[in-house]
Image (tube, rainbow over all chains, first blue to last red; front, side, top):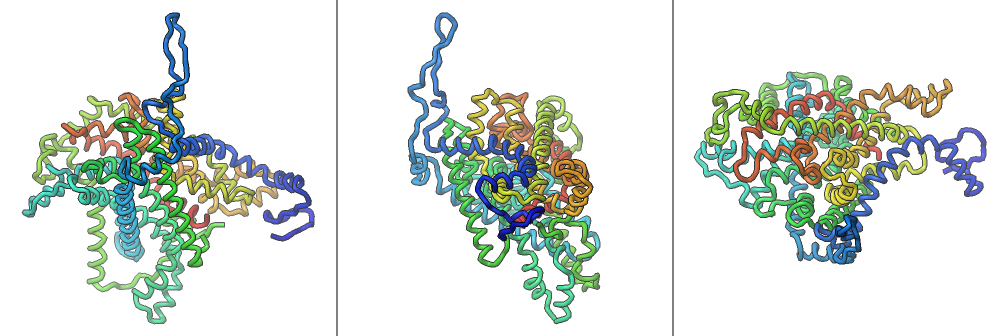
Amino acid sequence: MTLSSTPGPTPDHAQPAPSRGGRLRRSFDRHWYAWAMVLPTVVVLAVLIGFPLVQGIWQSFTDLNESNQRSEVCTKTLGGGETCKPNPDAAKFVGLDNYVDVVTGERGRFWLWFTNTVVWTFACVSFHYLLGLGLAVMLNRPMRGRGLYRVLLILPWAVPGFVAAFAWRFLFNENFGLFNSLLTTVGLDPVDWFSHRWTSLFTAITTNIWMGVPFMMVAILGGLQSINADLYEAAEMDGASAWQRFRHITLPGLRPISATVILLGTIWTFNMFPVIFFVTGGQPAGESEILVTGAFRAAFEGVRNYSLAATYGVLILSLLLVFAATYRRALRSQGEVW
Amino acid sequence: MADPTLAQDAGAHTRAATPRPRRTRSPLASVALHGTLGLAVLVALFPIVWVVLSSLKPGYAIQSSEITLFVEPSFDNYVHVLTETSFPRWFLNSAVVAAFTMVIGITMSASAGYAMSRFNFPGRRGLMWVFLVTQMFPVAILIVPIYTIMANLGLIDTKLSLIIAYCTVAVPFCAWMMRGYFDTIPKELDEAAALDGLGPFATFYRVVLPLARPGLAVTAFYTFLTAWGEVAYAIAFIQTDENLTLGAGLQQFVPRFNPQWDSLTAGAVLITVPAALVFFFAQKHLVAGLTAGGTKG
């Protein structure tokens, strides 16, 4: 920040501030077109995300459900008109009751689903990243058929999520799925994939790993190609082994891209709906549910409990925000400008 | 602002940045390399191939535990799905919803992306944070309030409700992607245009936007695919068969009892083909756009 009193074009961040009103005015003069350009998006975001978000947070403090969502009860009168009076059973403010119920396990199975979510996210993201890194490093070498390999390895990405989920559910089918057929063919017993919590989660994690590796691979490949080739040459002249080059040039060179894709990957996996919903369907008896699918079922299956689902939503969002903030801080402390 | 090497198309400068010149590799290393990649390709392809093969089999052969590649191959399942189920209807619904989401997402967010890329206005950082944070919104927190709002407006079970809901995903995402793309267009062009007397809006509309066509196309494609593959909102909002989209409709083929895997496999292939075509036009620029936006928040 420099204080500049010279007229004419000044750098954007230099803010001469004679008075509050004048400063605002000057700021408006300089930036009104930028603001005008972002205005439509901001309005849409405010209406479509801001308003529902506030309402969702509010709902999590009420006991709103399918049966008490009307604020008025209307009855037809003889003359054909309608009279309405306030619904005596309308949803009301209940304070932190929902949160207490959820966290203490009074309603729903928060901790089971939370453990599942953590296992699921950690397993998926680490496999995505490691497999993606391995494949990208291999694909980054000059060799025959590189383009073909690249296109074929990206294919899973092109399959819409719910289609991939159904395809894998088909493969894991207990009676005639490919995996059980293969197991029987080699003389092993077929596995009842969906009747145990961990095998059930295993099917979903496998599916998601299959779906997510291509993104990581392509992203890391882009990162690899931005590393200066001279570094490798110099290292080779100094007699660095392949491992040393990987350890001291490739990995540090990939750090910015890795930081981004791991954060994005974690968020996406945490919120990944179709895989769990369609592959395991929560089988057995909701034990393989993650938080997002659990919240969805609370809201839209059986007796629809909107307030409980909203509570889950707020908890999920808080978890993610805490994660993102910690992650950012960890990167900062390691000197990353991010 | 953004590191130009990151922002560029991942494949564009392969040659310039190839780490080492082509050298002779020992035959063993060569076999190991191609062997590993071959295995990876096999893993990537077999589910797709298996579903395609299954879709050509008659129903009884799909539900058999014997492993066979071809059993009386025919397109009967496809004919059945296309003529005797509501699948074509769902397909059309999905296309309409995805197309509108795409158009709204792009028109809303292109100018915002440009402003965030070029101007250092007060509120810019905050706005970029909002865009990033909205990407981490779980479906669970917005779906209930949006559902109750739609119910109050009488929009439940309409395509419009889905379009509006998908815009919550599409708009921040598009703005983010477009910003990444605008960052790759040299700023000097804007300055030259300004010297020639164009105002900021004219510069954006007449100079930068035409250059950003590939970025627009990719963002559009990607939004289309996101809407094409969405299921949670579709299942929650749509109640009648004629308004279902593909994501919600496909599960009707496989109820818990008496699932029709023959229809499902054929439907899965039919859904994937257009998505895959669109995807391959867009994929080259996708990651670049996403990660360029992310690296310099």
